[in-house]
Image (cartoon, rainbow, N blue to C red; front, side, top):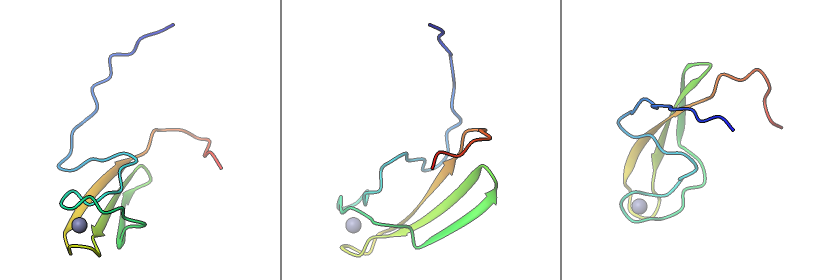
Length: 69
Ligand SMILES: [Zn+2]
């Protein structure tokens, strides 16, 4: 068993597997817009249909060569 002391870089709004409106909690199906900075970083722009709140999330992919299907 190996322990890794990882210190993930913080971004303004980084969420993982959380696609809920931060304002009203409504579940969001898909981002309105996805902007690819590079192959490991994607920024999603969301808008809540329930309350109209708009926000962004940044997703960072692990450097893997295999992509789980
Ligand atoms: Zn909302």
